[in-house]
Structure formats: structure tokens, C-alpha cells
Length: 458
Image (tube, rainbow, N blue to C red; front, side, top):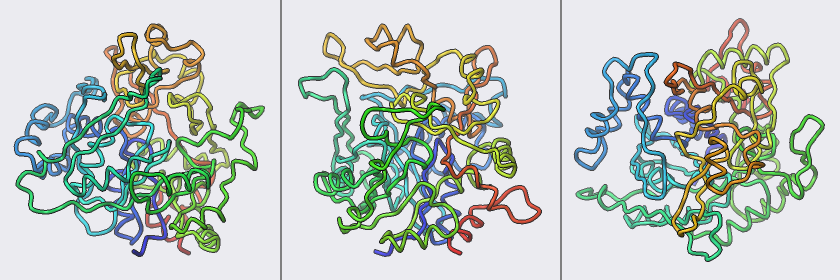
């Protein structure tokens, strides 16, 4: 098949939502929806009143009778909740949780969904919901997603799928698993589901080759991310060394071997500082099918980032002051995480230190084996005493930030605490955040996704 040259990155929590993906798709490129925390996004948008009706429209198309109505009756607040009222919570994802979610509507362009291998609990339900909505591509990184191609094959046939959950302290190999059966959602449905193209996000030729040879089904291609890409980065090879500023030190061993990846024979796209004019042609000369760009799209008009923060970052870029810090400990996953340096956000030590440690979303919790053999859940960013009681170590809690709540606040869906204190955002972007102002037209202070595409294709 003919693949798009440009893949718009699947970013943060709702940064790359339906509006951005739809715009990019209508331009003939691959628009990508972030698949992170979809259940919370749906519930909170309903509680804000769903002013454009998009959430209720999507729920009305669920094939299981009564499911959409039950979700609406539980979370929808006509006119929106009071500004100082907290959002109604939903159950934290776990081995036994179930979610059904939609992903694509309103156009015939190609759309993908981006998922993190490190966020395992909602993966099966999110994939099935996306396939039910006609998703064209599934992109996954932040781990080794060997099981996902087989899941896509089974769901396309209407069969149940299972996903083993990484469990700390399980030396027996009897890993916990999540099981998802799509048959109740397909009852009375005459059509079969399309099997999406699967693109694995990798940072080395070794991982690409492993996935190509040892996955449970067909890997259709790769997105090759350099360490300058936003969000979670692959850790440097070998013992962790830090720069004088405290960032992970990357060296020649961390540069992906493009020739070896090309030799695998599958299409690949280059990412990480490739979202700038001229880089598409450079990537094609190296044998790539195209590029993935995230940061450039993250600050365009259609992205989900609160306009106030977008404007502040663009202004910093104009002044030559926009930068990110690759934080080696911020993320509970243990992966380095790029954080935009911006006053009034969790990027500052003052704001981070003032925030009480709370874990009430739970997407990045680790599963561990309790003494009685049952699964337990803990997060290095939760209250320290709670974490220690669950067998964690004090060292693992140092510097950990609540990525879940911070990313929700970035897109205007932050929780309000009982004392009225709002959750502060944590913005992530790649190194190219320094140059996002290049997409502004003369006399303007914002730019669009179409402006980015035109610049990348020029």
C-alpha cells in the first residue's frame, strides 16, 4: 500500500486529538490520535458539558445497546460542572478493568492511534475500540510490543485476545494477563473489522529486527525515534551517565543504524528533529518512507494543548528561550521524559515540591506480586509512605512526577482538589520546541497544522 510521507505524532494526553488528526488526514497525511487516558478524557469532557456534542455523538454509535446511554447518564453534566467542582472519578485501570472507546469519524482519510507499551491495562480495549471505529494504523512504542500484531489479527477475526502484564516479583513466569472478548460488541454486526497497519516505534536496529522476527503477527513497519523526540525516550545504552545539567548522556551507540533498519525490508519513518523543512527529503534519501513530526504539530491551533500554554511556548521560541529538559527520573516508567521548561508548571522545583503526592488516575502504576501471590499496584509518584508499604524503595520515589495528572492539566482537563487547588500541567515536547516559531506567517501569533504540512513538504 502507499503510505503517507508525513506521520503526525501521537502526543501526550489529548494533545493529538480528533481535531488535529482530522486536519492532517484531510491533507493526505497520517493524522494520529493519542491513545493515552482515553477513558478519563471521555468522562471529563462529558462533565464539562460536551458543548459541541462530539462525545455523545460518538457514544451513540456504540454497537452494544444501552452502553452509550449508561456512560452519558453517569458522567454527562448539562451545561458543564461548576468551575471549582472536582471531576467525578472513574475506576483506576487494573487487570480487571474494561473500557470501550471510539477513535475515528467524519472523513475518509487515514488515521492512526498511538499507544504506549508501558500502559498495559487499557491496551486491548483501546485497540478494539479504535478498530471498531475503523482505525487505519496502530503505532506503539515505550517498550517491546511483540504481542500487539497478534492481537490485531485476532480482533480482526472477531476472536478474544490476551495480553500478559509485566509483574514485579513474579519469578515463576505465571504472569497476570488481561483478557478481552470482542464478541458482545459484535453481536448482530454483519461486517468484519479491518486489521490496521502496525508500526512499532523503535530506537535501535536490534529492537526493529527482534520485532520483525519474533512478534506474534506481522509488523508492517517502524518509526525510528532519535533521542531528541518528545515524550518518553529510550534510555542510553550502558550504565546511566548524566550531563553536568543532569540529563542522560547519549553517545554514538544510541544512534540507530539506519542501513540495518533499511535492510529489514519494511517501510520506516524517521522521527526526532525531523519536523523541519528539508528533513523529509533527507529521510527519503536514506531509504525512509517519510518522517514523523510531533513537536511542530503540538503547538499548532488544532492541538489540544491549552492555548495559553501554546502561546507562551511560541513566544519563548520567538525569543530564542524555548527549551526542554530530558528528565531521567520524572516519569514513573523509568524512561527519560522530556519536559518543557515553563514557569507555573511542574517543570519547576518550586511547583513540583508544593504539590501533594496523589495517585488517582493510575495509568503508570506497576503491577507487583504480593506475599499472598495476588497482584498489587504501586506507582513511584504516589505518596511515599504508601509506596514503601507496598514494597517499593525510597530511591525509586525521588524526583518522580505525576505524569498522568500533569498531562491532563496541559489540555484543560486538570483535576480540582477538594481545597480548590488545581493540578498544574507538565508539557512535553522534543528539542525542536526551540524552533516552532518558524511556522508563523508574518504578522501572526499562531499557526495551523496545514502550515506545518506545507513547510515540511516544501
